[in-house]
Length: 303
Image (cartoon, rainbow, N blue to C red; front, side, top):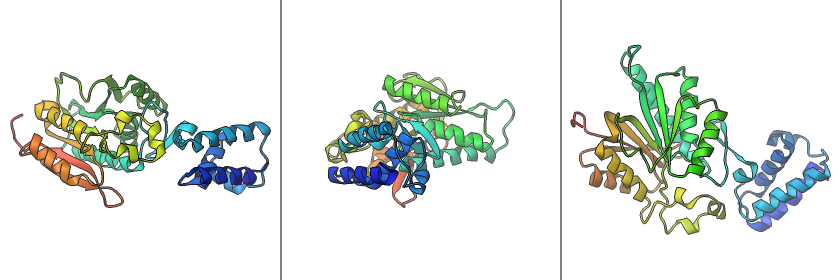
């Protein structure tokens, strides 16, 4: 069979299964089997496949028909221009989370350039809470290095799941970021923090519990603990806010927390409740939707 014939058959099966993007799924899966990108697939529809390639593509389509995410079948997901290894150990990185990396990188650069720094100045200490696949921590380290920032920062990436932590370490090594990103198995943050963090980043679960069962079937293959944020979606985030109150954040530090597009009001209310007097402003994503809550203590609060 040719590329076009195989794609047509795969697309028909995926369409019948209810896939929201059957042709794209088929192209991505076939490209994965052949070891080429979609451009090559589209440029050579007349190319013939071997029997083995046809069989492997059929198996991949079988998995997708059950609802398994394409990213898990391929074993990779593009995020912030980088290819991350992904599997059922961790949540698949979402495009909207790239905004968290953008805001964090801009804040690090602001801190480095706003005032002169001596050679012996302390590192900018960053925590990536609930790192999952490590996408945020690793992408941040990579983009800072592209801006010439190499030794002025350190990221501590924490994760409750040891399996996800192993995946994050693999991604850090794969992107040559293991020297700037340390990993720790912890529930949110280490129980004892000697030196507060300058920046705390988090893409914690924020989907309401009653919404989780209504998500696309692909989400059912991902760890529920990485999605379920409790009754209003902010259960885990509130626990992190409490840690901020207890001194996890430096006096001039800032927490950058990803939120759902409909959660601007509830995150502001949560900050007012848990951190009275602290500021909370929300950065929009590229679609103009609320995405990153920036939380900071009042200037000179004496913490």
